[in-house]
Image (tube, rainbow, N blue to C red; front, top):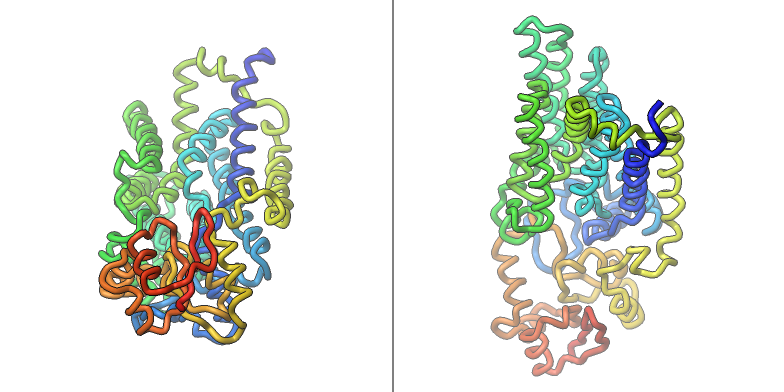
Length: 482
């Protein structure tokens, strides 16, 4: 029997991975996209067309701009409160992590699974935020779980098609589900051609066809597919958004990704492959996506966790001393009670959500980066029902629209693709204080400004024009036209 001491490393790693997963799911930071979803849900409920970009700003939007996340917006909005929407978001993240644990444990031992999950969470942590993308954090592992079932069930094409139809109305990363189905189909077709058993090319072929066709079932029709396929390459997005930039190794978030990818590559070299064709094609494609833009990193990390765990198991098999030093996972994480432990962890995530607004902001992390005091002052100063125009920092647009949607029209928010380059150029010129911002704001009927204290040129111009500082905090300045 293995000594108790030899179980310490593996068991501690398992509990550390569980604890980190609970913290990341429970305290996911809501960003502008989260608040924008809630503001958009309110507008849709009031009669706005869910297929079109919701009218929240006074700067113009493209006439044919679509609203690709309308389903996620309504789900968040149906929660009825910000903490309720955070609860939905946290459950989605928790579910995605649990399904990934299930996928990984099906292929590797408990100790290897614990190590792989800890590595995965280290690479995934910066991407676990409060936003519509959390739907895909849950659905990517679920899609892969379905595709990996063997033997492939006959209902898979229908079930996967339904999943992709729902997914396409929630978040644009449904494309990953399409890519996964195509890669697994190619792998099954190759197995069949080489006479390997079992192989399920017919079922997987129908599943791939369903994955390609099902996303057409959305209010925007084929326009959604054009948006989803084209968004990563849009010049206006890549020139503005940090998360759509290439994953240059000197960027801290990207550096972690490259370290994780290096482990995958080393595993392939040492094991001389050690991966089926379909899975290898998928991971290669996801690695290229991740290198192309930071936002695509989560899909590779989630998809590859089982392979990392099998690499760890192979390492243990070749180095018995190392395996003995790490030991086996002991206690409830090592047997059927693990499901109960995971369920308790998810329950803790849920229980914490209504408490977050009452916790210190540094812990609760609900409005950590938002201009709360400015929004409170505007709520006092402006009557409901008459929307005043406001010049604002882009990253605050969603929160301001959520808090004051019946009182203000913001200038800009995080929806990069719904405006042309000329509009963005105009906005940035204003924010940089170029020309005569005060005169331009007056000509557009803008009476308020919510700005960063670092906007020296713009603040100086508005002060010279007589604008009054209503409130100044360490993070934001509220000004009113005289």
